[in-house]
Amino acid sequence: MKKEISLVLLALLSVASTLTAQQKPAYRIFDGKGKKVKYSKMLKELGKADVVLFGEYHDNPIAHWLELELTKDLDAQHDLVLGAEMLERDNQGELGKYLSEEIDQAGLDTLARLWPNYKTDYAPLIDYARTHGLPFIATNIPRRYANLVYRKDFAALDTLSEEEKSWMAPLPIPFDSTLPTYRKIIKMMGDHGSPRLVKAQAMKDATMAWSIVNNLPAGHLFLHFNGAFHSDYHEGIGWYLKQYKPSLRVKTISTVSQSDLKKLDEENLGKADFIIVVDEDMTSTY
Image (cartoon, rainbow, N blue to C red; front, side, top):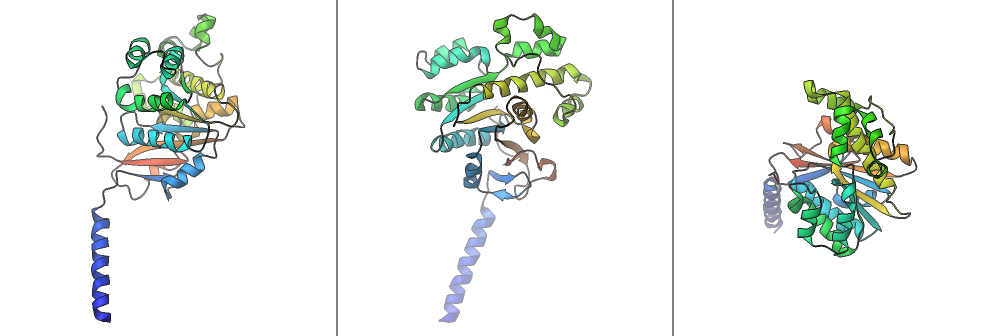
């Protein structure tokens, strides 16, 4: 009898081992130190923040799916405000009309500047806000003004009207060109890199941070969606949040791609409080 039980247990262990070997996880979550964590643990920790910066890969379907799932789960526990890099401040009026159902999707498509992947990747978030009555803030500086900084430096913004200046962080913005992520931009761009390119990036980061600070009611949690480079290593938007309101509790998420999901690559350590590692073979949304 004991022998039969042992054989059964051995068979069960063999099946379990085979099933484990056959699992193909699409992503895993790690903390900044490289420790594997469960989604429930991340959710609990993010719920303690005033602001969560979700750094995505713009074309990654896992990141977009998790953004929606995180929105639902945080909304179930907190008073939530949503915001995104992908919408510019001068389109807040059009976005507000869509959220209040004054216009439909066709109207929003016509009146607002939407990213090419809006319908697949960002519409689900905005439609969730519309259905559940959540504020959704267009946080980014209008692209034409970031391009103006790239072409003519910060000083060119001084010539704008007061209305145009209202669509960006107050001038002059704090600026530190020695931040590692800004220095990395110059290195990555090679011959195309310039101090003005970094300043244009800083105008985006500052404006998004300013938008968050000025649209965060007491007792609410602001969940913000942006490209990972805007918040990696707690710089970018996070650095500006510290300048504008040092008391804010800010948590960050980053998205990375790896061939091996078993551990966090050394180069990705410390990028954020939580790091979503996606299989590098994952299909892109565009």
